[in-house]
Amino acid sequence: MESHQSRRRFLGRLIATSALVSHSRRPIAIQGSPPQASGQTYWNSIRDQFSFREERVPMNAANLCPSPRSLAEEVATWTQNIDRDCSSQNRQKFGALLEQSRGKVADSLGVSADELALVRNTSEANNIVNSGLPLTVDDEVILWEENHPTNNVAWEVRAARSGFHVTRVSTPPRPKDPGELVDRFQRAISGRTRVIALTHVSNVTGVRLPVSEICRIAHRHDIHVHVDGAQTWGALDLNLKALGCDSFTASAHKWFLGPKEVGLLYVDAEQIDRLWPSIVAPSWGNQVEPGPHGARKFESMGQRDDGALAAIGTADDFHRQIGHKVIEARITTLSTRLKEGLTAAGYTLVTPMNTDLCGGVCIAEVPAENRRKLVDGLYSIHGIAGAATGGLRLCPHLYNTEEHIDRAIRGARNLRS
Image (tube, rainbow, N blue to C red):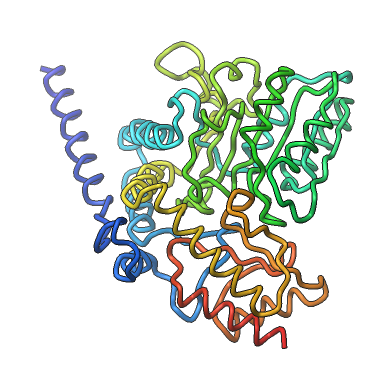
């Protein structure tokens, strides 16, 4: 009798969870299909998925992106569900939802679910790699000068504690060919080099490194290559196995258009055992199999935002529905239009025009003392939210329209005169 009642209670919770999932994952109302994306109807329907106002247009995807309205509503629905019943019995469902999210993201990135940890952001993921790799005083870590501080300064802080050597590599300010970039890293490798830490696309210049070629060279010397992909997850059609790196990090709140405070850490299966976790919380060892299973060992962090983690799978669905290649092509189209317009308006680009050497981050030269005034004027007068990072930084995404790009160009021209 007790067993029968337990089964009924379990089925009741399962039905309630299924109904909640169905309710929370609202359909995405996109008109047309990507093959017809040359017209405005399709992209206008994409823009309509976002709740920002036309007088305050976001164009700084390198820092923070809005989420589609349906995704934000889903996170709110999950949060309300927990607030109504925060019991462990009700929250059991989030374990399965987390695994659904992990599986979808892993599949999109061409890796196994066991190689993927869903952490809190790129900064945390970078520091997990930084603190987890075994290094001695005889070792060397090579850094790109344009890395984000959490993939640059953080290594120097650890070096001050552990005693290994750090070498910074600078690259040509306006590279014409990927080989120029590869050569700088190849020449920096020594017999002591154990790690090369890179940033896929720089947030301060918009330069895109030829990571796969650098990985091939590094692996001939048994060097671990770590890649900060904060500016490429959600912006490029990524396959991490093809990219060839040993570890890769990113944040959902940028180009992926996902919930806040969720990030990813990919670690190649052959590297997981040698990478130590930074945090050990009560969840350590509570998996079905004894001990942490794969990259999940890096998720031992205590209480998490279960609603955000559950919704990551929906964010991945959004990208899949449009198509990863279509998204990359759209970002390329918008950023090229922007760079051409800024050049015509009299600006000198920091970011290359060559699409093999850039992503969606677009930066134009502006003297440091003028940047803040220019960016504030674009926002307050023209309704375009950019950034003063590295110059005038504007990073369009699929929620932006051609009219947004042209407005940004007009504003930049007017504020320059």
